[in-house]
Structures are given as structure tokens and as C-alpha cells.
Image 1 (cartoon, helix red, strand yellow):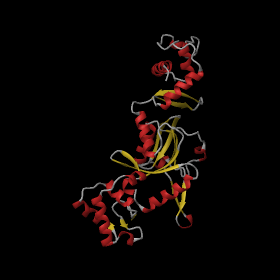
Image 2: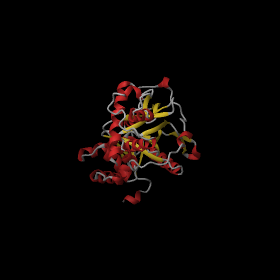
Image 3: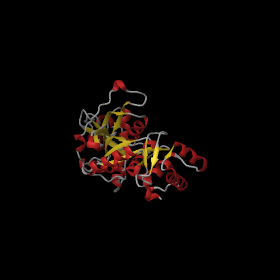
Image 4: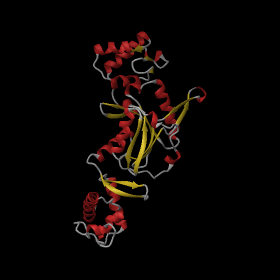
Length: 329
């Protein structure tokens, strides 16, 4: 980076602050006029006393675009689209903005800051099952999200979904998001139907389908069956698919559980009990807690990494070997 570019970046940040204080939107053309020292501009004429006024009289559109592009990739600023005027202005990113963005890249297995070519595939999707605002409850409803290119009202059907989409928006991670974007046909003769939670378009143009589940639901056979089928379908369209949950304020994926070590004492207890009883239920889980220190993440991970078959929800569950008992004896 050249010294002149460093100086331009400094004055861009200072100008964004001044524009916000004065109630002006910092569009690139307006900031360039101030930096060039144009006195008769509709906006720039108001900033004659600014310390940034006229500091770069020869600043070109290309040079400004180069510098602001670097700042966007560095996440020191974000671009916000004025939908009505069809052009974007800049805002200063929050202090933790870059870290939050990188954290979601890590969660989704993406390389930070590596941009894909823009795709309008997301425009082919729309909510396939409308959420009714009149039926909103304490666990479902709509919220206004501030996306990278404008605001959007987005539906949610659980507190966990609401937390997830708010975290995405607050980290400046998404350009667009669609709730209930795809209906999956599954089961015998594909007669059953299931609607996926969200399709997101990231800041670097990746498309990701996300299913958000409570941690206790992550290992349910039917949940995993639908996830694997959906993943297989979407790979053909270059759309990533993730099954996501939260544990102790951290978002984790199904794949994360496969990568980390299991609680060996819990694993031994569960597998031995399955060999003895051919099943494992809430009473066995309670007994395990008397002898072993483990949390819900350990429990779900043991089921998933050992390819066990779990049916039922919450505490009303039964676990079996996945149909091939001899493999575990």
C-alpha cells in the first residue's frame, strides 16, 4: 500500500464521520468532491471548513474506487445500498466487525475475504411457505435486518433462528437472505415435504442453505436424513448446505462435531449399554450422569460420530445401533 493510499483512507474515514454528524450520506461521488476541493457541489460546498477539503485535488474515480475496495475487504468500512437511488454509500464498520465476519467464514468453512464472482441465482428463490405476521408469537415473527445493501424484513420461527439471523446481520456478513427458500421432497415416493430455514448470500458472494436446530435435535435420524439429501441436491448448484446449532453462545455445525474428539468415558458407557440392552433412552442417560461428567454437546457428538440411530425428540428418545449390531460387538 502506498503512503498516498494510507492518507486517502484516513480522510475517507474522517469524512464518513463528518457526513454522519451532518446528516449526509457519504456517497463516493460526494466524498470525492470534498477531497478534490470542489466548492460548488451540492454537498461538498458544505464542507469547505473540513480538514479533508481539497487535500487530493487530482483524485480520480479509479483511485478512489481502488482505495475503497481495499477498505471493504479489510472490513474497515461497509457499503450500504440506497435501494431507491440504486447506489451505495459507506459506513464505518464496528470494532469487532472483521472478527465476527471471519468467525462465520470459519463456521461455514470458507476462506476469509476470498470473493466469488457475483451470481444472481439467489433471485431464483423466494419463500415457498409464507410466514403470517398475524400469527407471530413469542417464538416466531419478523424482524428488520440491516443487510450490506439495504434493510429487509425477515421471518423466524424460533428464538434460536432470530439470534442466528441477527448475528449474521450484525457482523455485516450477508448481502441477502431468504427465509423458507426451498421445499424438500423426501420419504417414500417423495410424499413428505420439508421447508428449509434460510438461504443466505454472503459478503463474498457464496450461497449457503442453513438449517438451524436446537442442539438436542441435531442427532435425530430424520433431521440428518433430510440434511444429507438436501446437501446432495445443492452441491449440483454450487450452493453450500449447513446444519447449524448453538452451544454456550458459539455457533457450530454438524461437521464441527465430526472433527473434534468425543468424551471417551461417555462413548464407552453408551456403546456397552447398547450391546447389553440393544437400546439407550433417557433412563440410561440419567444413569450415565451419575458416573460420568459430560454435557449435551458430548452426548450429541457421541451419537453422531458412532453413526447411531436416534428417534424421538428431547427426553422422549430411543437410540439404537444403526441397524448393524454385529459391527459393534
